[in-house]
Amino acid sequence: MTLTVVDMHTGGEPLRIVTGGYPAIPKGTILEKRAHVRDHLDHLRKILMFEPRGHYDMYGALLVEPDLPGADLAVLFMHNEGYSTMCGHAIVALGRYAVDEGLVARQEPVTTVNIEAPCGLVVASVEVRDGKAGAVSFESVPAFLFARDQQIELPGYGAIGFDVAYGGAFYALANCRQLGLEFGRSRVRDFVDAATALTEKLKTEFPLSHPDHADLAFLYGSILTDGRDAFSGDETKNICVFAEAQVDRSPTGSGVTARLAAMHAKGEIAIGQARTFESIAGSRFSGSVTRTAKAGPHDAIIARVGGRAYYSGRAEFIVEPDDELGRGFLLF
Picture 1 (cartoon, helix red, strand yellow):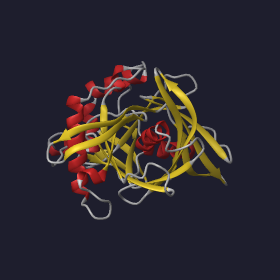
Picture 2 (cartoon, rainbow, N blue to C red):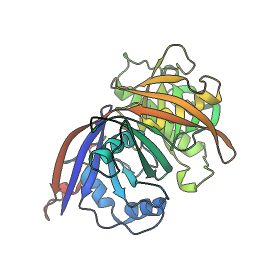
Picture 3 (cartoon, one colour):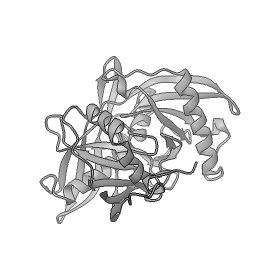
Picture 4 (spheres, rainbow, N blue to C red):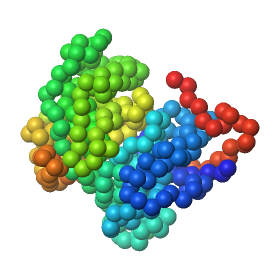
């Protein structure tokens, strides 16, 4: 077995793009392709994401044939737990990758790349100068505030206020100070433990629904913020803990989209107003609300999120027949 990949990162968050070794994926909708890969090819995810080739926080992308009209390419996202519905840092990387690899016709000063994700069509705008791809921004699917000003009793932390918003995936949003945490003072491990506890509690006690498809109605993770949602200076910081307690090194593209939806619904950001979102690693994404929209019964927005991706390597991976650990493992 041989698998080939291109490794990139966006704001420090890795993206392992599969370039060879997967069998053909049957035709169908993107959600049907996602289900097929999950049910029949999950051993390949473990080989690429888990040790000894990956690590607990590795993230991956598998390009598949698009189904939506107008899509230039389609992607399935993978991580330590399974397969997500949207990933903004991956879109930023894939936008640059698509231009560099000639998957779309290169145009200056901006090349548009239409990417079909499990959540729907995402439009990436890639800056191109002197033939080279640079920064990327994207407009995702309609994002909305699902529930605002909720409260739950979280063992070990007390009463915690939170919102739930959708930005291609559902996130719980909470001010980290409620949990006794502060950026620059608290350990990352403490943020992870608190966010994971909130996610697991809400998964059992807070049902979700999505107007388009039931497969989209699950809580992907929790985002703990510095509480600076209302405009009080440009920058606001957050940490996103998703999947199986996986930590995003970037500000999280779909998470920034969800935060923008919540901010707009609460009157904390206006259309066209730009904010900067900083990650736990210090990397930054730009974010703004471009226009309003609808998502079924929900008042929604279309957000624009931007960042920069870089290449970190190319690799060819093999698995020897008698190498059991080589099939992938994680240390919790």
